[in-house]
Length: 209
Image 1: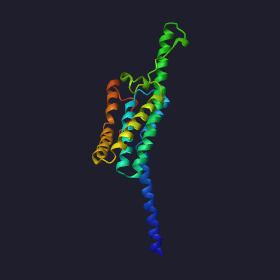
Image 2: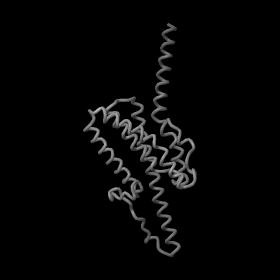
Image 3: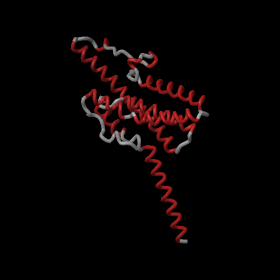
Image 4: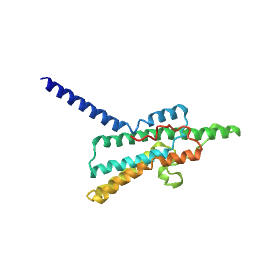
């Protein structure tokens, strides 16, 4: 009887460990962005965070999800990609709102210096549907980023559907997902180089999970 109770306890503990490990796998990747989000929201300054980090992670995780249809991997990793995509969209929304507000405040100060009226202030809008490469990923509305992500997802999903039976294509898709994610540090490195500072960057944001 004692042996049966011990086996039951060990089984429950094993299940608990599996659940904890799965939870860490699913949410571990987004943990570094929580204090980053709070700092940006508190200071209303997104200069220390590159929105291209969001672009890299969105592409990598969309490709990883599409790869899952060709090569099923662990379910927690699939959920990790879904959670990461949602997190990056939330970060994009915050950074876009702050950047647009900052541009508007800059215009207001410029007009105030020339004794102009606030109603004359207009910030030129940069839209995804303008297809202007000069303003790629620098649009004025979160909706434009969402349109871009949906367009990329639809195109990549259609191509995946056409070539899903090809082992070479599926393996290439997996490689591109991993390679894209490996380039994650590049946008932030470039932003820090531009700013000549690492201010606003959390030191543990670069930790991999």
